Image 1 (cartoon, one colour):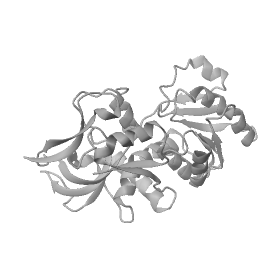
Image 2 (cartoon, helix red, strand yellow; image 1 turned 90 degrees about the vertical axis):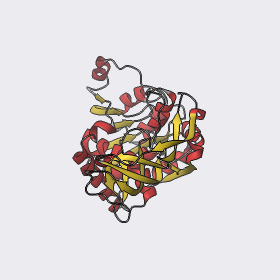
Image 3 (cartoon, helix red, strand yellow; image 1 turned 30 degrees about the vertical axis):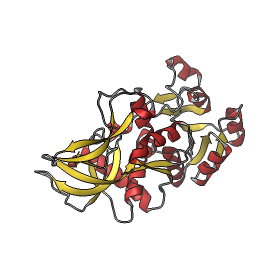
Length: 326
């Protein structure tokens, strides 16, 4: 049997639990495609799963998205052939690998003009932005949206795409340098939320206007402020927990803060159906082709340096997407 190198976790915890090991790689089974991976996307959910915040059965691989080239197809596969450039998201844990077998239903063709790196950097994050901007609330002209962690991978896409949809975009980030990144990505206003009194500074910058939608991937450190910064009848969307899980919110608090709506969606249910997944990806790729969304790759690490990639992400030392290179 053939083999490949893959990051394996035999324990949960610090970045050092990730070990690059040689593992068997059988031929692709029915409805599967075997890929030689060319670029692997990092997402913060990888950190949560490595640490055990979202526990996985052990031993386990890690990672949710990558781009690559088809090497072989299994029985019953149509629409894909050796040499095709493809990308996937949510094809089962294990993207941190040089090669792997993936269900054909979870693959999308990478269109001409989109690089493998761009696809790996954008698919998971871009589809997250797609459901946030197009489904959780269909953002349009006149909306004021607030994007926390606006210098991060998803945050920058939300700024870019939200601005292209006609919204006024307010971003927050953890330093003056990151605020500049958010503005470069399309934020009309960027506020440093590491500084005391930042919510008041934000409202001063907007002339007192509050957000129709608040996109909060930070969690514990920002969620109560997010409720204060949402307009009456506005929507607060929790889609991550970079600072720790958000506290429990009593329903009556939503009433007191302005009859607010609160939701906690996820990218996976929005893309569980293969046809819907490909339609969502097509909308994302169209936004890329139109120049509304672009990959901003902040750092690249060798697959063998996955621990360093995780440490950089957890220290918030990076701006934009992180890629692993097989």
